[in-house]
Structures are given as structure tokens and as C-alpha cells.
Image (cartoon, rainbow, N blue to C red; front, side, top):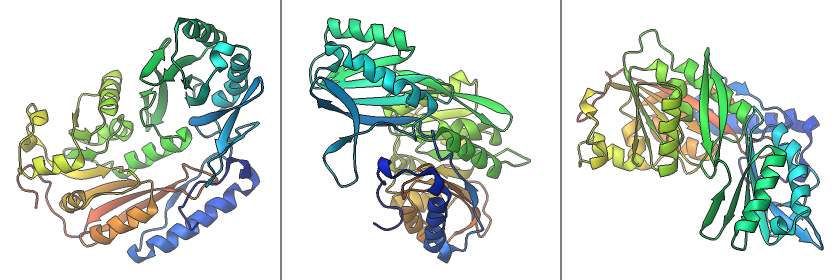
Length: 382
């Protein structure tokens, strides 16, 4: 596989080679984006160990014992693992204890298929046990005992069934500038896997959008649970954020309220739908309480999925003075930049190593319009 391809096996992790692997990725990225003449990037490295806040494991059953297991790239057969050195300290500490509890109780072990962990830098742990059988009251009683003994939160899942014993979320905290932000992170909701690097991403994004006169507005597409939204809010007069996932919208609204931020509105819409609304193509009932003409959008923030921005969103982006683009796929970032470079140039460039020991690399670019244009409002988007 070439640069930015699939994951490398967990078994190949070697912290002594971390810097060389990062340098190799940086070299490949420099070659990929060379045509756009970006400035030298700010590089935010990861800790070589214990950086991953969430992970999923298959359960390997052999005789009367079970083990955690993972698939090698290209292989359909899971292989038992003895340790997980990239897991967060909280995850690594609880994994053997939870497995011992599972192996000690047939109610918990029988037809257990997988275990998912969601942890925080502060030590909270949420573990989801996934089964190929219905879960009854006996399972719930046994799981509750383990939850209390280990001091974690447990969830049971099977076909069309979800059993929450106490709660289905954890709370992560990040310091951005001089402010401590609290984030509810819900099971099955998307969260950044590398907590420390995510905090660095938030601070970089906050820095490059900071102005002396925050009297213009931010439009954010793909806002998720408000990860960047909360961090950027105090740099703008108002923020309008969109997200298509119902669960993520609920989390974003919860996080906005929990942090007592009053200049953010979140609407459940796709980027394509919002583009139509902003262009006046058709009205949407989901925007009935939002007057788009009152916004003075100067900056567009996007953090799209690996497929990058669709054609309509790229066209919309060209009408903004500034575009802050966080990319989890340098290949689709390059494709989008081929279009965006017609109207914008790269002012700031950063690299975030969210996924050590893999070919994946997260990038951030701040694009500034080549010919200055005033902020836009609904109805005057080209």
C-alpha cells in the first residue's frame, strides 16, 4: 500500500520507530501537496504509547477461556492479543480486569462477540459488551456486579437490544486557550480517538481563527458533537453549525448548554441541504426559527468524512473569505484543493498525528481568499 493507505497491524507497534514513521508520513504529504505551495506545517506529534481513547476488540473463545482479539489488515481471522500498548492508561488498566470478570462468569462469557471501550484522559471508562444472544435479567444482575466492582460503566448489546446499567456516555475535558471545555461523549457517537492530539487540534484551530474584532460569523458543516464548535465560538459573533446525525446533534446541544455558550445554533441538516437553503433554492422547516439574513458569514469550517467535500460544498466554500478545513484523508484534501486553490491560497498549514503506526494523517489548512470579499449572507451566495 502507498502512503495514507490501510492500518498497520497492532503487533508491529515499536515506539522506538515512531519518529521515523511520522517523518515518512510527513515526507509523503509534502510531495502530495507540493503543487499548492503550502507554508511549512506546524507538526503535532502523538505520544508513542497510550494515546488511543477508544477501541473495539473481537472476543476469541478457546475452551473455557476467552481473550481479546484483533484482525490483521487483509485478514478475516481475528488473532488473540496479550496487550494493547496504544490504549489509554484507563483502557489498559481495566482490560485485564474486565476479561477476568468475563471468564469467571458464564453468564457474561456465553456468546460474547466483541467489546468496545470508550475512555477519557481523566480515567472514565465505558465498556460495551456485544452478544449473539438476548440479554435477560440474570445477565443484567451479573453485569451490574462487575460494573460496581471495576468502577466503570457497562452496556450490553445484542440484536435489537441495548441494556444501559448506569449511563451510556463519558465526559472528556479539553483546555483551549484559557478555557476548560467539557464534552459529553456518547457510546456509538463519533469522537476523536487521540485525546491529546485532539486538544492540540482545537488549540491550533482556535489560534488561526483568532481576530482582534470578532464581529463576523462562522458557518460550520459536519459539526459532530460540537468538538470544534465549542472551541471556536468565542472567536466569532455567532456560530451556525450543521450536522446530519441525530445523535451527534443531541450531543452538540448538550455540550453547548453544559459549557454555557450562548452564541451557537445547531441545525440537523446535510451540507447539501444547507447549501440549498443559503442559496435560497428551497426552504426547510428545520430552519424556520433561524433567520439566515442576520448572519454575516466570513469563515467556513469543515471537517468532512474521508470522502472529502462534495461538489456543491466546494462551490459554496469558494464564496467565503476564509475556509478552515480539517482533513482525515490527504488524498481527498488534495482533490478539493485543486478546486479551492482557484479562489484561495493556503495561509496556515498543520499536521496532526492522530493515528500513530498507521499510514493515516490528519491535516489542517486555513485558506484565505485571494481577492478579498465582504462577508456573505443568505441570498448573495454565488
